[in-house]
Image (cartoon, rainbow, N blue to C red; front, top):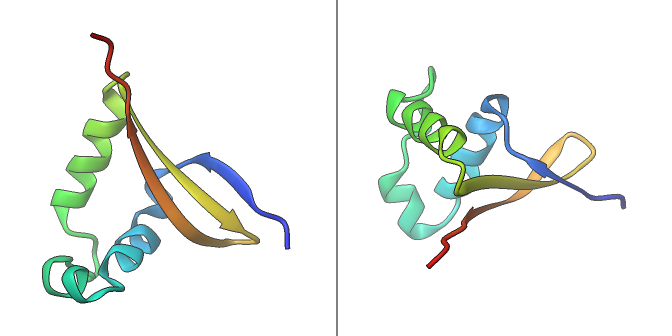
Length: 75
């Protein structure tokens, strides 16, 4: 199995939301409706516009397996 790490793209949002919803806590709080809830689009836009934030995915083939958010902070 080959895996790839890459920055998340808006086209990943639906799959990322389903990943977040796939546990007992996420199932109660995430909105997997279609079209995608605007709050997720706004969050993705805020992450993309902030040079201190990045959202990464790990994928195999065309399936996203994991998402990871990183916040870079200089003190």
